[in-house]
Amino acid sequence: MFNFVPVLLQDGVMKLNEKKIQILLTAEKLFADNGFDGTTIRQISKKAGINIAMISYYFGSKKKLLEALLIYRISDFGSEFDSIVSDKGTYLEKIDAFIEMMVKRIHQNRRTHKIVSFEYSNPFREINFEAYENYKKENFNIVANFVKNGQEQSEFSKNINVQMIIPTILGTYFHFYYNKNFYQNLLDISNESEIEHYVHNQLTQHIKQTIKALLTYEE
Image (cartoon, rainbow, N blue to C red; front, side):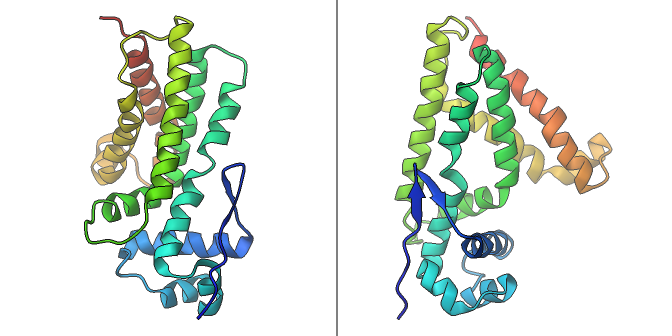
């Protein structure tokens, strides 16, 4: 029996060594491609080039590995958002920076979002999502407080459904990405590099316009 080494958090952000990150990134790809049930620790070990004993020592089990992956991908949101808020500029300028950050994070973490969308809705899965949910609540509160401050400065309208801001960003991105074969033909995009460019430019700009319209719309 191996002793599970707890994952350390510093200022709420997960701190990992290179081997742990290598294991998590390998597991992330395999979980996304093959599903959680379709992936074994042996497969992760082989793909990462790290022995099974080391994976068990670091994470304890496949379930704990997935739980650690979710925290790894979400735990630094607050610090990244704080750096945007602390910069000079108007609230609308900061919204632009926030959306750029969000799209970059979503695109980078799209495999994790795919895993969560399947595993989170599985009523028979015994994975502990409590820590992940707590981070999501904290992140929502960070965004909600930012919007509230923008309202107090009269840069945002009074009637805003704050709960739908992040789902609007996520929904727009994933509708595009999960239908990328259709959009490749529609937009004459021929390869992954051009998809990346479209995501970080035209799609991001569209999301900026949408969110800023929602934040400034007066009935």
